[in-house]
Length: 290
Image (tube, rainbow, N blue to C red; front, top):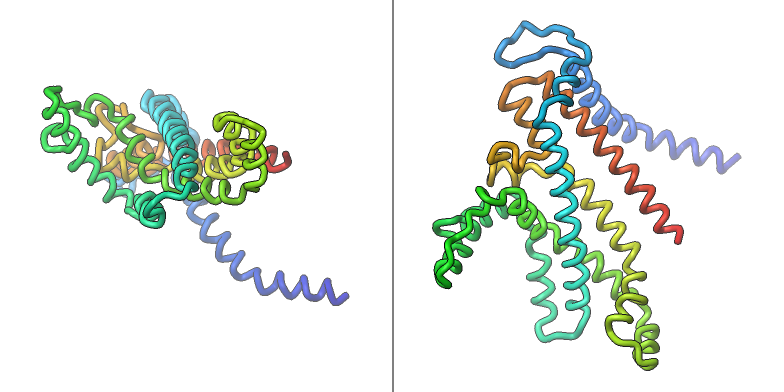
């Protein structure tokens, strides 16, 4: 009886916070669903009309939608590949005793604390600018024509910028996992004559499997909504070459003032994000059960 009473008291005390959280999530979602069923353009106030699923049909059949889906997946896959592989290598390096190890760790972690807009502007103007950027200066110094990153490889440029931002996060998680590895296993394998590559492949990498899964899951949730880096560098162009799903919804709702179409795109983005999240959660569950 006492246990049931304490549980009821705990639920009663938590219920206001849960109610506010549900309202904070459900009310905007419900309004988005409602607007997605209307023909609602900000340039024509007072002319709203119910159109049902017409906005969804328009959004899903728009050629830009398929380009945005492809760019979103390429952006996600490219950043995950760079951050996971680079994070493992940096974690292995930082785990070794080197001179100035504390300073090196701070420098590796520093990019994660830079605002996305600021880092994108720094990369755009100081590094990738084809006229005055650092890469252009280095190319001219060796007699090579400067490469216009945002005109010739816009999506790859954004992948590099975002990877630079998220590499410290992956490094921290993987470094913590490596430091939790029992050193006796490595010492025993080294005494048995196992080379460094086999020690990494058969001991370190399996130990990092759970940490890598967590990195992939958390980064995927945030990478599906990358926006600021695209806005301040390529603005989705040239054409739709660097437009992801989030930027397409922004362009539909705030650049074309089509609230109905933008709301439908937002619902589609939420559904696709949840599908990816459910898939990754199952992947994490299987990995953690091993």
